[in-house]
Image (cartoon, rainbow, N blue to C red; front, side, top):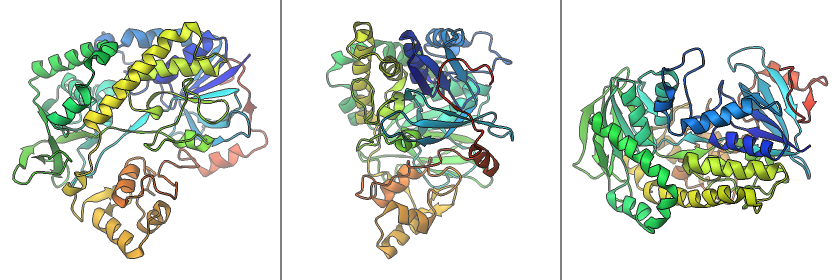
Amino acid sequence: MTSVLVIGAGPAGLAAATAARARGAAVILLDAADALGGQYWRHLPAERPAADERILHHGWSRFTALRDGLEADAGCEIITGAQVWAIEAGADAAPTVHALIGPSDGGRRRGRSFTPDAVVFATGAHDRTLPFPGWELPGVFTAGAAQAFAKGERVAVGQRVVVAGAGPFLLPVAASLAQTGAKVLGVYEASRTSALLRGWLPKPWQLLASAKKGGELAGYVGSHVRNRIPYRLGRAVIAAHGNERVEAVTIAALDADWAPIAGTERRIAADAVCVSHGFTPRLELPIAAGCRITGDGFVEVDTAQRSNVPGVYAAGEITGIGGADAALAEGGVAGHCAAGGDARDPELRGTVRARDNAGGFAARIEAAHGIRPGWPAWLGDDTIVCRCEEVPYGRLRDIADHTCSSGLRSLKLSTRAGLGICQGRVCGRTVEQLLGTAGGAEAVSSDRRPIAAPVRIGELAATLSPQEPTEHVQGKDTNV
C-alpha cells in the first residue's frame, strides 16, 4: 500500500488527505494546531462551541464533510499539535520528516519521524505586513491574527478598529471584527481603482468559473452595509501613534506606486489597527526537502502538483496565493497523484478544471492588489523594520551602504535584521526588498531555515537517541 504524509490540515491538506485515501493510500495528516481547518476554517474549540457555527464560515459544510470523513476513516491517522521541525532530503525518495508531538509550551513533546512513499506539503502562508512608523506599538495586529482572535476566541482586538492593507482578505477580516462587536472605522485598500480594474476586468467571462466567490463577496458587502463600514481605495495607514499602545493612526492617499500623496494625511482616533498586504508562503519545509522555488517565491509544481523532488508534492498557498477554492482543488490533485494516480485520470477531470480556473483567480489578485514599489516612501530613518531585533530602516540602509554588501546573509549578520525570534517570518521579504537582494545571485532567502521551528535543547538531544522511532506510514498508530 502506498503511504502518504500530508503536512497541513487547512483546505489543501484536508482535500489532499481525502483524495489520497480515495486512491487507497495509507495517510497520516499532521497539523501544528489543535484542530483541523487551518486559518480559513478556524473555529471555536469543541468544549466551547457556537450555537450555529455554520453562519460564521464560508463553505462550512464542505469542511465538516472533509473533517468527519477523515476522522471516521481508520486508514487515516490525524495528529494535531504536531510541529514538523526538520526535513531530511532523500536521494531518490521522499524525505524523512521529523516532528514533535504535544503542546508547544509543554515540556513533554514526543519526537516522531516518518519515511512515507510520498509527502504533500500544504503548509499555507504567513501574513505579509509592510512596516510603518509605530507598527511596533501594542494594538497593531496582522489581519490574520485579528481574525484568529475573532473566529477562534470570539475576542475583539479593540473597540475602534481600522483595517488596512491590500487584497480581498481585508473584507472577511472586517466582517469577523464586526461580528465580535468591534466598531470598524473603515477598510483602507492601498490599490487604486485603476489597478483593481486592470486586475479584475479583463476577460470577465473567466470569472464565471469562480461564481461562488461572487456569493462570498456579496455576503461581505452586506456585512459592511449593515455595520456601516466605509471602504476606501488608494489609501493606507502610514503611521500609528500612541504612548503605551495605539491611540490614533494617520491615513494618506497613495499614488499608483503606493507612495503617499503630500497633503492628504488624516488622523483618526483608534485603539487597534489590523494590517495585511497579502501573504508570504511558508517555504521552510519545501526548501529543506530540496524543492525548486520560482522567481516570485513559490514552490514550482507540474500539472500533478509534483515538485522537482521525487515523491514530494505541494498544494495551496505555497504554490501561489489563490484562496480556499484553489487550495481545495490543488489538494485534491496532489493527494490523488501522491497516492499513485495521474492528473489525466477521468475521475480527476473536474478537480483539475477547478484548479486551472482558480489559477487565473490568483493572477487577478496579484495584478489588482500586489505590492507596489513606492511604499518605502512612508518609512522614516527611525522606522523599525525588524521588530524582533529592533532594527530601524536608517541603520539597515547605512550598514548596507558602508559595507558595500549585497548578500542577504552578510547583511543579516551585520544588522541582525531577520535573526530574532520570528526568524524573518514577519520582516524577511521586506528586508530583502529594501536591500534589493530579492532574487539575487546569492540564491539565499529568508525562507531558508534548516531548523523549521524552535526546538528545546533537550528535545533535540532526545531526537538523536538511537531509540527514536522512525515510522513507515502504514495506517493508524494507536500509540499516540
